[in-house]
Image (cartoon, rainbow over all chains, first blue to last red; front, side, top):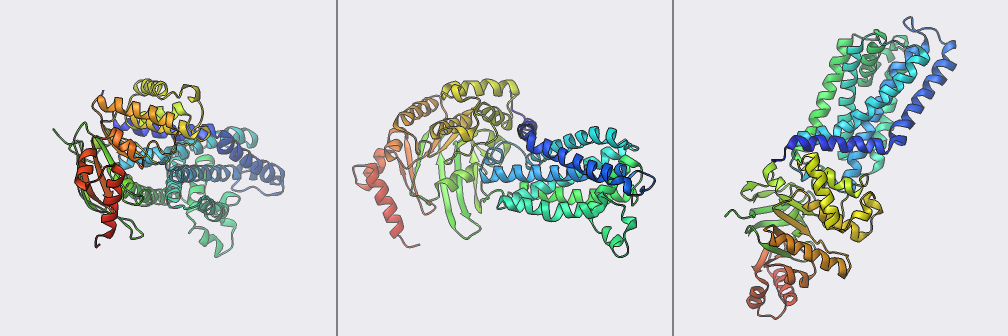
Length: 256
Length: 246
């Protein structure tokens, strides 16, 4: 039987998912526990002292943002660490030499981060929704927001994993860029409450639109139009995917 | 008959300015056991990496059984055992073989069958569920070779396959490589063990400073350089190249 190149994509994606499963305490358990602690501490413990936001209890309001933050970090850090390790140990050569198109390699490696992020999102939803009573008002919008989120952060992880020269580089982007931007992107508050110019500056933060899109999916409300959130997130995701595809197509940074 | 490997005017300049290959031409007929010898830094691994799409070549063309090296058809026909054991740290021996088969487009059933066959051929059964970082050096070498051969490539490239292994395993690997060659597989071997090249290869090329500087059978090379051993051929060829004006 003639070998089919699409099988390579399926096996590469399966390998990335297997890695997530084998390291489940690091890849799944730790981020789920951390996010649930946020909900318990900030939502249930301190939430009673904070007034409602848009008519929602505070612990309900923060659930979408915390899930978005956990999923974004998972998609990013999974892919950046996986590809960095593969480059560092050179076992990525087994993939680069294989009969696969560059887009298949790119997609296969990206799927690992998406798989991890979606599993974390499902686990957090399954725990947080019954605990806080958070609704899922717009499931289709939520699914679209999740797809854009995992695409954007999965591709970003691939790009950083390809450029990183040490393990610290990929941690740096997570700790210095993603985490702070998510925090100030409206995870814990509506940017409406910020004084000028901070409210306007928040609109320049791309993570703000990701959080807004997911919040709309859960609550049916967000700081800005959901279409604007989708458009901005999709534009950034498209640019990031184009960047990662360029790296695979040309071999830059992957091949000397 | 199409040559197994055809390299025309191959050049490689690394980003730091190092020139590893300078307009290299090479043709390896189908079914040949071909040896590539040369000092460290001569360009052997760069040439191999170029054939396997693991570097960005600066100039020139490579074809494998008539197909351009970057094509999917050519990639399917090449199996590579790299010099350094670059094994996936998250996969067991069995998984490493299984997933490699998948990357090369085999069905699950075909990949499982071939993985089990390779596990037996390379005596890896006792370690089949052990992850690569926990294997001994010899076991890693066996796994590298098993992985390179799993998808039944027509052109097998072995980059110093016996480096750092004991005599017993070396002889065992030789036996298997000879068997593979007797079944019609084209083999390109690089090695620093000249007795290994003499024992296995029908045709040997010496590479120095990014060019092929001599090529013939082991006996032909000795005659050409007027010496009695392959070691003398090697030393003379490399010495002459290093003295030649750039």
